[in-house]
Length: 176
Image 1 (cartoon, rainbow, N blue to C red):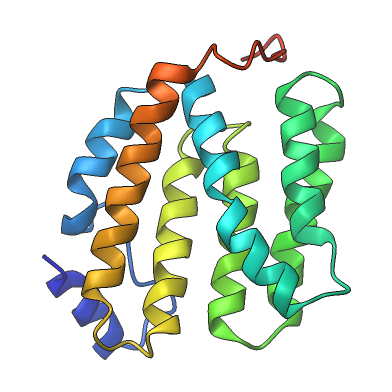
Image 2: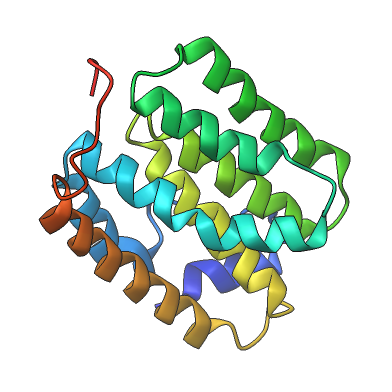
């Protein structure tokens, strides 16, 4: 199930998952059948854990938090795309300024979570980068159990948002 990931590790790839990764087949199928709103709710909520890791590692850095806050405001129609896009690009720029590969992957994960508001295909980008960070956290060894648990968590949370999309009485931007 992880042979493609192991191959990427041996080849020293920086990104260890793709939308074609075998372990993501069920999740991608589930994602393909969701509305844009559900994927936005899921991605912004899924970003909380990597956001906490980045906040605890970079205590004086607010770009990851601003990315999620601005993206959420954009999804609600409270701010224009231009402002959210800047926050999203800022967190990707942060990734270029740091040297820890796990934290770099988490920055990109946060950026993709925020960009899910724009295009739903960014939701899988979030997954790809966060899972890469988890493999790196495990020193590229014995990561399979952690990845399997995380994918199950993604699926469970996605199913939750499928059934609770309207529960928040949330305001949405017109394009959503």
